[in-house]
Image (tube, rainbow, N blue to C red; front, side, top):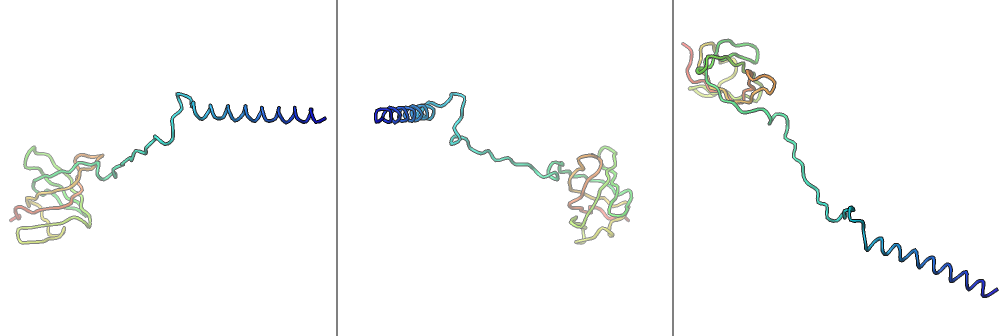
Length: 136
């Protein structure tokens, strides 16, 4: 009976030895298509905000009409009109100093700096409005 036990123990040891050797070859000889995780480096992705996609514009023209938080400017070059939208961040300047939206008058020549509406090229969200020539 001791020989049977000895053969069983030797058989189990051979199976364990065979398993360890197969595992060793699998670790030492990896598949050629397999990539190592240690060589991968993360690539940062920068997604710009939607407001930065719109282009910056500068237009000069005469105010044709004034509405509620908006006005229409007839451009000095090209004869086209542009609708200018304003908000609480818009800055106003006149030859006499700082102004407000209510100080704008039809007939004044203005310079508008702002961002174009990405859906409508004839509309600008004004960042600054400079009154060049006061209407008489």
